[in-house]
Amino acid sequence: MKHLSNKPHILIVGGGHAGIEAALAVSRMGKKCCIITMDPKALGRMSCNPAIGGLAKGQMVREIDVFGGIMGIGADVAGLQFKILNRSKGKSVWSPRAQVDKRLYEQYVNEAISKDQKITLLEGEVVRLIIKNNALGGVLLRSGEKIYARSVVLTCGTFLNGLVHIGERKIRAGRMGEQGADGITEFLVSLGFSCGRLKTGTPPRLIADTVNWEKLEVSSGDRNPTPFSYSSSDFNPPNIPCYTAQTSPACHEIIRENLFLSPMFSGDVSGIGPRYCPSIEDKIHRFSHRDSHTLFLEPEWRNSNQIYTNGFSTSLPEKIQLKALRCVAGLEQVEFYRPGYAIEYDFFPPSQLKSSLESKDLPGLFFAGQINGTSGYEEAAAQGLIAGANSANFITSRNPLILGRDEAYIGVLIDDLVTKDTLEPYRMFTSRAEYRLLLRYSNAGERLVEKSLKHELITLEVYEKIFNYFNFCKNILKSLDTTLHPDEINPMLISIGEPPIKQGCSAKKILKRPAIAIKQLPQRSLGAAPARQIPSYFAEEMFMEAEAIIKYDGYIKRQLKQIKKMEKQEHINIPIGFDYLKMSGLSKEAREKLNTVKPETLGQAFRVSGVSPADASVLSVYLSK
Image (cartoon, rainbow, N blue to C red; front, side, top):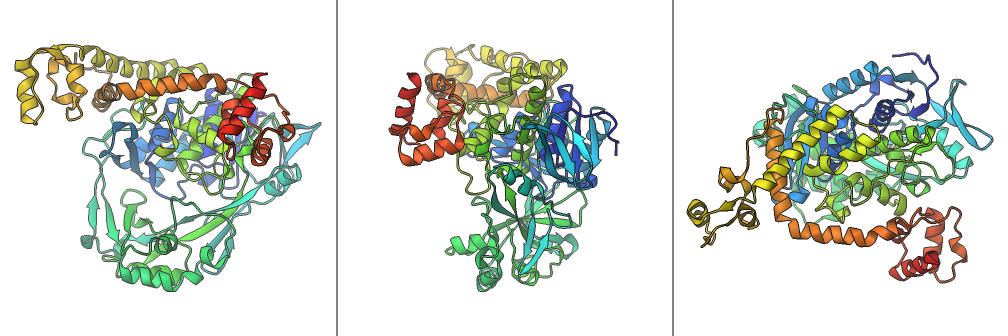
């Protein structure tokens, strides 16, 4: 561990996914920072599931990569299998996901931090901020040591007053086996910040040798996998299989009979759990008509004897967990490495933040990750990157990095956080993005690379690499203007039941037919072979991207028109200190919500929960005057 020799510009509290991305972003922008963590050995730990990406999350990982983040390339290095999800649906919602070797991922992240000369690592527990003359000046550690800096990024995860539940057992911890943190919540509340309580859970870890694998179904990755990172080279993951099992009526009955022992049902847990990633107790209670639920058994690292039971998150007593799982075919003799558990923790409603993730009331203080009420590695990493970049922008008095809802899933994530009520842990889905046709994982580079370079988050070399990929895509689109003649295209069209053409027409027009895939077109209409510096997996992705552009052309134009129409209100700033309570034309709920959230722009105000179209109209007219 490096010693704190030079005074850092920025302090980052916490060494999880948000803290890691924040520190590396600060470093890429040429500033020094210090990560303060209670356990340096836990840096970048994948504390829950051994996977990165998934529906909408995969898009965010690709976006993080365009901004120079480590999550994508770390997953590519440590990946055990890769899969594109949602292939049965339109290409706009295809999402990459990878099973990851947790140990190798941690090792990769730790090496990156240790080699970075602008990042120092300090073991310690922050208990309060140093504030002098109403300005942020650093942090105070439990040891009494003071560390000074102009900006602080809080990425405390589930550690703030963390409480682990396993049946009636309660353990004060940040996560199983790790000490919780107290002091920060109480100090922030004393400053006037509001806080709340949330809950998340994790499933049991099984001993692989006690599973009868022959009774389970194999789930492999894609044969031709796609990496997350534009910088990945020699990408050839091993495609190690996962397995699926099905719960049984007997398993459900055991859980049903013991619901009163679950802290979530007994009232022992005050925090609200994630609706979209429910516990097995919640699934069986809410979906009582279903006889079974799918469980995914995933290795936690290569050759691991520790198996993650995805789909069986629970806080029931250990004996009940084991009894229920032994009613599942293939798990009749199963033993635990560790039981599942629930954890509740403090969070700070992110409506108290600007779109830059900076506090509205204390300049220089940024929040990122589960402290903002989110759930998931990817959501945390995305926030960490933005908070880290903006802490660097803050100390240099530069404009913050802010992403719009039409620019990135990260933009949707942050806008939702700062404008909507956080009633449960926030998880990203494609359905949250109204412009998801524009936010394909395959066009993340084209969407964001200019902004990334402008904020000095990537090198010119990385910029040129991404630019070349999309230049190849543009060449494919140009080639699709090639005229195809009936004799060269009709045999293929007839073979798949498509009407033949009677006269020459462009390949682009043929490709607009829903049943036609780009690789079914004659080679001469697809242009020259890709340059050597474009790996085969990205060449294939660029063909897919060109096909999406052609097929979605009408929808894309319609969404771009909507964005242009909304653009004006997105740029109408609302004065700081604007008093909504005095606006009698607004409904009572709108006045209260707007006064709490304090939106920065008219567009944000329209998206605040409780603001009706009529309220929006009143506010728009008032501000225009």
